Image (cartoon, rainbow, N blue to C red):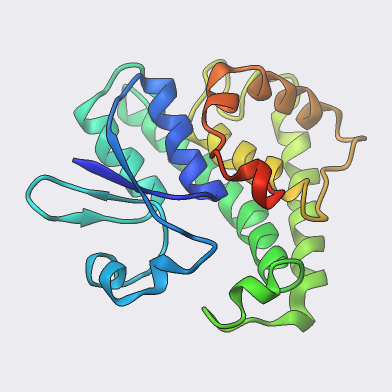
Length: 216
């Protein structure tokens, strides 16, 4: 088993997940900035072209970061980052999807269509005219989430879950590319500091982060 790894917030999320769960898997590096993941060799393994992916010993390749985490948690249930019961898993998946729909999908689209346009314009259909709207929607989502978190330690309650990792890796990345989180969102600001203090936050940063000037 090996992780097809690269720079980027989604690969970072998987690396953070692995560190939180103390899972050791070999990494095979790919040049995301150089579009290695859009080349024929990679697309034969993962036609979606995204990173990260998980290549199993039998040759099967699992893509989609959350699906990879689901798979690995089934193999390594403790410590649970998705849940130990059906109720816990449903709650985590519900909040993870809310985070994706209201925040991360919007913020990533805002980046791809503006600051990241030169990187993505030859890789996917880009809509520069929609960038400001996606960025605004992402900020709306953060404001909504700030109210939902309230005094909770983490998004789902007392324990860190993949919902926290997904949001943290996005917000940390976005803050360096023109989409800083509003400092008046006190609950989220405190939440961010709690996640930032975890060893996995620093350990999951890719060595290329400093070189490219983005946190991923």
